[in-house]
Length: 329
Image (cartoon, rainbow, N blue to C red; front, side):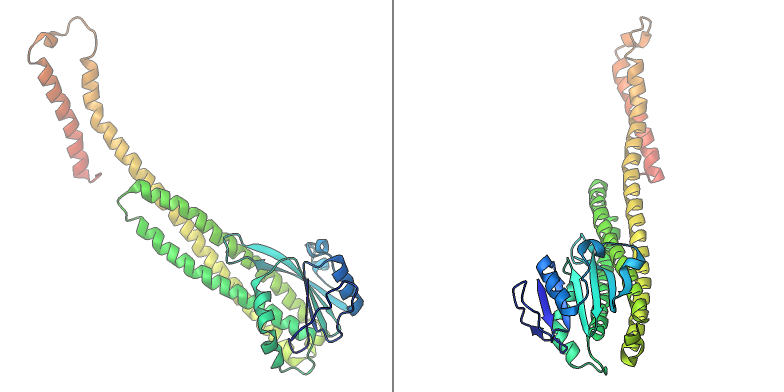
């Protein structure tokens, strides 16, 4: 699918057929899951080759940021599905050819949807001398950075709430239920860590793209775009540090959860150990009188059975009172 936007951010009509010519007024050409026919359409309009899906997955820096035949090729790894527990990284291709920007993507990051909805408002009031694909590119990268900030802030609030929940559970009186809840919480913590890690990876990729943009003559020659790119670089650096801080909080929460699980399990083991110590003396006495020795004089006495029971009761009560005094219960 192809979406076309002019220099004012207004969505243009798509010809709808693979062999039809695209309008010359198209400034931003957004290709989502493009077919070979759609790729041929765009290549005929811009006069340069559009990278394939396999080329977008190339991790070599020289294959992700380069200039060829007068066109600038950039590939950014952008976080996608960040609102779910299974965040992903999507490789987005950017081609700057003349005054046009072409984006090639096989995922739908929310930043693209938000920017496309507000493109008319964003681009209609720009303050640069020569509007075109470079301006759209800068504002689109800015939208991705804003989306990363939104995801980090959302995850930070959820982690704070989860932290309060974890430590409040530890005060419960049912160790078994607390342990089950904490074990379930480990999966939630892992989901948060996965999302934050994907955002950090995305920010690293955006930092490389932003740095590369600042080397382009079209950017360096425009004071407004140059300042915007510098501002984006600062924002990416700040967000990366914030992501590191959130990641450290997640690690602390994970360690705390594992520690609380260990404490609860130790509590159970302590109760079992005390119970074993309480029943050990009576068991010993019962075992002694269960021996089949012929010469056990007290076995023939009428008081032997109640005395044996009394001794067993006292031997169990003694350890119980001692552990109670030590505060093990």
